[in-house]
Amino acid sequence: MSEISSPPKINTFLPKGFSYSTWAELLPYFEELKNREITNLTALQNWLIDKSELEAFLQEDLGWRYIKQTCDTNSEEKRNSLHFFIQEIEPHTANFTNLFNKKLLNSPFLNELSIDKYGVYIRGIKKEVEIFREENIPLFTEIQTLANEYGQIMGGLSVEVDGKVLTFQQAANYLKLPDREKRKEVYLKINNSRIAEKERLEDLFDKLIKLRHQVAQNAGYANFRYYMFDALGRFDYTSQQCLDFHKSVEQLIVPIVEKYETTRKEKLGYERLYLWDMDVDADNLPALKPYETGEDLIIKTIDCFNDVDPSFGKVIEIMQQKGHLDLDSRLGKAPGGYNYPLYLSGLPFIFMNSAGNIRDMVTMMHEGGHAIHSWLSKDLELTGFKNTPSEIAEVASMAMELISMEHWDVFFEDSEDLKRAKKYQLEKILSILPWIAAIDAFQHWIYENPNHTREERRIEWLKTHRRFSGNVLDRSEYPEFEAYSWHRQLHLFEVPFYYIEYGIAQLGAIGVWRNYKLNPEKALNQYKNSLSEGYLKTLPELYKIAGVKFDFSSENVSELVKFVTEEQSKLA
Image (cartoon, rainbow, N blue to C red; front, top):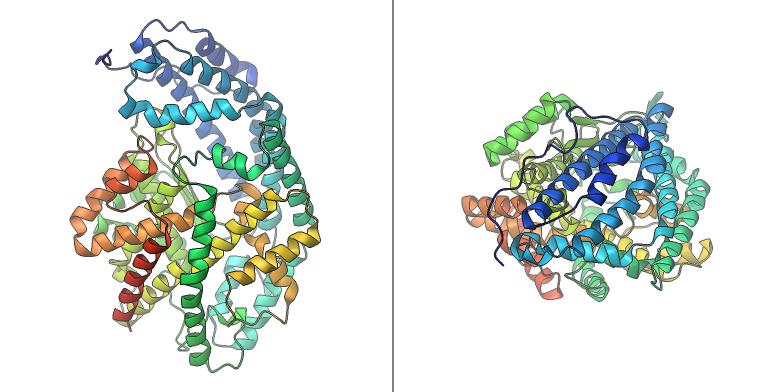
């Protein structure tokens, strides 16, 4: 039967201005969806839209609780607000979500839904039902509560430099100074501060591993790795392809990074190259200063995005007007950066820890790309259509880093500074790949060997890290820093197995940028068309719409690396 063409009704499921303070106030809306009789295709579509409205409301409520807590980790009130949702709301919604999924899959009108529109969504729903276990609900609550402790621990860390108490991000600016002894002093302070928390972080991680392994076993999986591949909806590639990608990075990228480090060592004239030598300009030029304050970063980002596409600049401008940007680093703020899509209002929120350097500027380009993705997909009919997998979401952000690079004169008026900034960016997009491979390979080992000891974990990390680190940098003076360097990667604690996506997407982003250099208008249209699809298509299809291949084979890695190195040579 062909799909009925009459449009589904406008979202009006929840009362205007609805709010709640207890689960009991939400329960009637879940019960209504559970008990509603669905008598035809249009009724099924309308039920999906009402369900989606409820999901979007809760997603945005959780979003604001999380945003406020990460912006101020010292606030007990904000922490309790987030924990209330995790502990008092989510355990109830999880059971209903499974009931709703089964109601959809058992509907006699399911097969009348358009495959083109609903196919990918239904594929994901089937997998959710397959892996759902009621006994995992309290485990997820405990896991999420524990994972939030990581941000609280890291957000509370600081160092004192020259009589000033600084966040790690602020202190990192000292690592760009020509004064080598000062760089070493600050580097040691940052890492000693982190190492001081190693036992708390190790305790936390041990608890998370145990709980995650139990989740996997409850769902019938041998280990958490296999469980997460299904839970993340990795329908379009396998764990073996990830391992093959690790090997490609080891063989093709690590030697390039070693050349970068050798050149740096020679330019600086050092007998040994240490980690505190990696951020200073190799030619002893002053550190690049693309902006002065968070406000200046916003203004320049709007100008830069306007040059790419006026609609992009408008999105950042609206976010600024609505207070959806928190950019400056400060004490008590959680580490990292993110763009949080808010599905109900459609306007995302960008959180980051800027301290006035080029890395922060690139982070803003990155998170701005996510924001554009959120904006372009905001009008899709169902919340599930907007919940895009990271493999394409990170193309949105990483491609924006590279596309925007063609307009960085907004940040760097001096042509030589602009050239330096581009060199920095091209080196970083390749040099980050070994770290991505190391973190992903480490996760595979962790969850395939869930009963390992801390000492075994330390040894495995060192082995993995050195596999992807080359032999130029000297880490021998402070071995403990290397042994626990993975502690700084929040994904391991908060979002396990979310990291290989950065490597896969980096290849897609390079492809988008290559297209942009050949034909800006066509490439930009392809980019926007792909992002506007949300998750209505498979990953290979979304990549194809963007004008690139979903391919992280050694052949494609080699081809794209060749393009990047050719572009680097033009800047010499």
